[in-house]
Image (cartoon, rainbow, N blue to C red; front, top):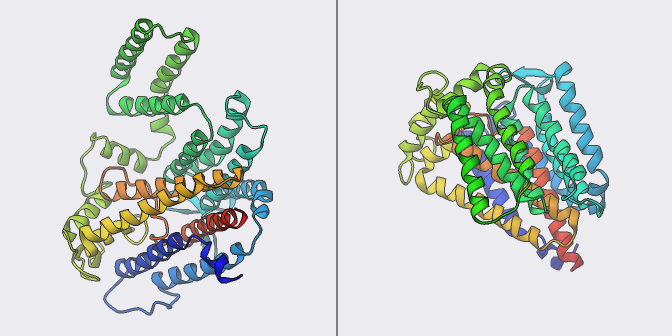
Length: 419
């Protein structure tokens, strides 16, 4: 590889990646600091383990950069179905942590297969959508796309790990970008709105709102002389009503009490700062402590006192907010925003169908994780156990997100080399 080839790599994205991982290690060190300084390479410590995961990620980088693109296309179905088998195997061989049977454990080594399934789904979905015969105007192809996304989503939900399952909804955006009728997305939003209204209030209020919307829309169509299938419209209305009727049953029988409590807290049906709402409450206190410039490295009172549970994983953003202040938080948000926008921009220039869709999938996954994690840390969303990509502690998360990132780098390099 000569110097000109090296310059064809997306060096800006690589610098952002290294910056986020490095900043993550700094904040993991701080959030796990117990008063005595620890060597960064002490494998018995949390920060030492994260360093190992980072070095393993760099080994992945070397392997992937010298791997032909066709390998990922050809192995897409293998990776996807392997991840599905691993998800099914959890019900027999999985280890329960935090109320969810979502981990394999072999001595000190643990692995969360739902992370691998994100990569597998991104590859397999990209492969299917890139087939020339695939047409998202055909119901058959839409059903296949839904199956590809829903199988890992459902298997992850019943572990139960609804937080990780929620991430699979990120794949809807690449599918829409590739030609799925936007009305399906709107209908999905209507279903989610129906669920939330029913949970917040009750079925009768939801029915009243839906009926008003139904007749208002009919009047709008009639006044504007827009023709639409009345049968489809009534069927859609029936689906929404059925969703509302089944909401409470699903809420009480599918979700665990801890998940129900978190949702009720966000919907304002419960006020609890010492029980289930403790994590978010302490996270918000930590972020507010940071003010503009932050308290300084290892100087956060909430962080030093370990008042925020899981601060090195799901609530790492609260460490950033407290010790680095508004400046640190804003810098983190800007880095993620710039990375996501850059990935999407370069995806738009990708002539290869498979590589383009994969890149959209990766950008969507990063955005979903970033949005949910930050929203959770500042109290806008319930605590659902979503790590911040590249920053939060966790071998499975860092390795898989690094893997997906390096595959994107490989694809983008190939685009420039072939042009």
